[in-house]
Amino acid sequence: MATIYVPVTGMIQQVRPVTNECAQHLITIRSSDGITNFIVDSDTYVIGAFRLRPGMTITAFYDGTAPIPLIYPPQYRAVFIGRNNSRENMYAGIFDDDLLSEDGTLKLTPDQNTEIVTSNGQRYTCGLGAHVLIVYYTTSTRSIPAITTPRKIIVIL
Image (cartoon, rainbow, N blue to C red; front, top):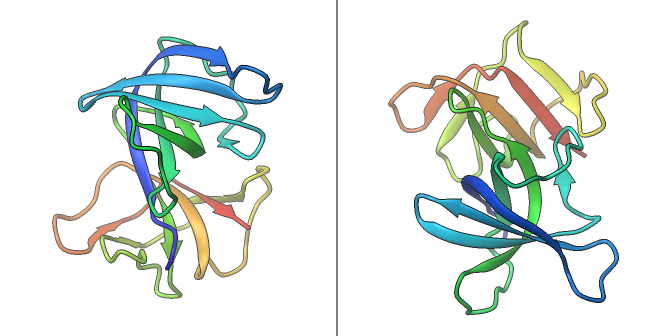
């Protein structure tokens, strides 16, 4: 079964260390759906390596296929975290060689203005298919799949 990255967008309410864990933090996000907690550790890719602080609006992605504890508020292990821009959408997922997302909801049509980089910020010039991509885009068609020309694509190798 393929990994499905589920986004949660909201404002950070609290950041606190996890007891007895040196490199783990628990962040609490308030979204339109309520409160969600995320474990952030050394395996979490924080896009742009910014420091997480209360008051920031972010999008956190978790693995929708991973087992989760049945607690309230829900708590997930964050896989990716990015700053949220109200005029821009973020999508994370695997794309095929035709740049169609694995779930069939988004088709990419990058152009010469699309910034394509690796997770460490280096320019990427190879094929995008069969990779996990984090995509930033502003507009898309209303078709299924939605078609967009992204502003930026981050290739997770």
